[in-house]
View 1 (cartoon, rainbow, N blue to C red):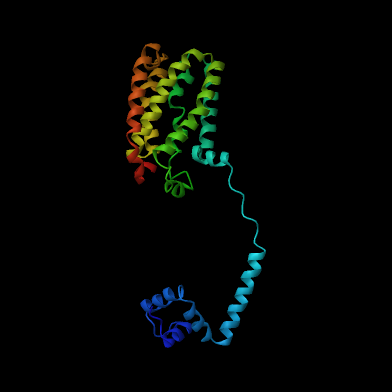
View 2: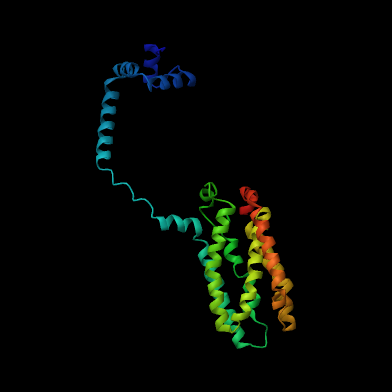
Length: 268
């Protein structure tokens, strides 16, 4: 082993005057493994530097003695909550439930209109899904996106969490509005809309995809139904097999787009 010369050690102790970065790095790497050279370095230090090091060491010893107890590990339910939910989803889910309640109240007040609950049910989960994987709304998105469990798997978990809240709310609102039996038919278009947003979200961003799917539903189904005062054929019982096939195909397509969610565009 080649030891640094005493002159080099002295220059290093004085703040590395005349030593380049490579020499400083070489000396520091050697000092980490050589106790003899560390002892030579300490022997060449001035008295005021040694006194300063003693004071720093004493302060560190006192700080370590009074160090607080380590934080308790997070509970399992807390880890599961972070994997399945995001705080930014809560206001949107609450807003969705509030809109459905208002739709049920308006439906009972104006029975001549087609069922607003049925018209809104297929796109009701989209606001929550839109913010489930978006750096625009999640302040911790950079940290979450860097974890191994991020991407399509996390989006699907959060979309499932949205559906777990919205679907029971739809069932309750549907019973209040008197469309409970027909509401079951609207769940297939709802699943198809969510799957379409997920499949398209990897290309243009989940938020943009949710807006596009919701707008397409509004133009193709909601507005024609309100203008004619008749429920669209897309929500008639005969359309259920078509929606089942469409939902299955879109879910399969969404599951094949996992690689898309490794790109920044998916979180726009």
